[in-house]
Length: 262
Image (cartoon, rainbow, N blue to C red; front, side):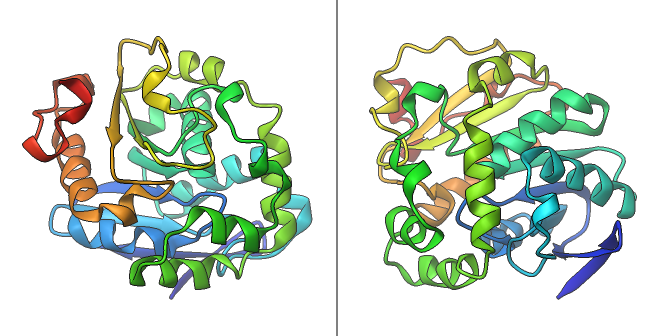
């Protein structure tokens, strides 16, 4: 377990591997734990960091820091503490939103983004997301696999106020506008069975910025990196391997996740 002191408070993080930096950000239901298999998968080539946001996992519980803007600022301070000049960001749910927000504010510090389980429009968000307790969210969004159970135990350590404050802040975020403001290559990954999204996301005729690319996992829910971890890790590695600045639509399709573009 690694910690760093930021603004006199403890932030828990895990680090693994060597090479170019990759920073993982967890979601509404989560902690660093949901990213461990992905970190291990790329550890030979990349130095991966996964942090617990304020109020989640092993990081400090301080209600004055639970606004989304405070969580976004945590990324900046953490990168400075770790002397990370520029990184790839991989975020899930809340972490995906923070990745986009941070990139809009600090484009010089981000090389590319992988946004997982991000609702592509506010209108697609299931209202139940705003009305559920952390325990209910964990039960609703996580599966019943061994890997999901390990994530569930960590997720339930979160301060309920941190979860609810982040969800309440989500109402004020214009997701479509946020994507249009982001100028870095971005790979969007969604599970087609994600219950936090009200309509099948593949049926929406959404126009993405030219440097965005969308991939659907047809056997995943809200946690594609757990539900189909082998497929997710191969896609993630291919994305990270792309030359800097290259459009993610140029990724070479693998047969097992080719369904989206048939």
